[in-house]
Length: 243
Image (cartoon, rainbow, N blue to C red; front, side, top):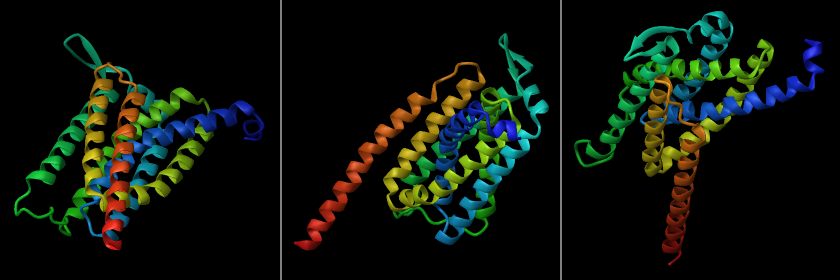
């Protein structure tokens, strides 16, 4: 352990891997924020904290199952001449789930009955949301940890990077969730983001990797435009109040 702490390459690997884990964790934060936005504030905080805690637990468990996890990349099924591993199948299933869920939520945003805003989730929906968060946590955890294995050689470095990244994610989840709750139009952007991530996961599963940088740039640009719109709306509201 002392040798690791005194090795500059270890610190470089820790910083790089932590940054990568934070970037990959953005998908997880957006998904959780969209789901819990339908809950009352107190339950939303609980669900968000529990969801991120489960994400951390899944990542740490997977790190201690390195031999099994590496075996997930071995082909177990062949479709149309393409060998698919368990990792590929999980990514495809997770991507399809994200596509379904995001499409369903967009439909509910604009096609709900009654003409008013969608009703808050009932008490029983809390468990359903936690189950959905658990499912997608598993998918994102496998993607995240497989990336970590490819970037670092020492288990303590990977564990430290995951814990630090989850700390950043927990700190950011509240403000992101609150912003989505206060500005409903950003929820549509978040759902569009999940659609893109779903497509990316399916593509990864079938061997057609789409660099996440393209997706993050598109969403960052859209988020920037929406931020300008939100600021302009607030400025108009202040001007109207002062008139």
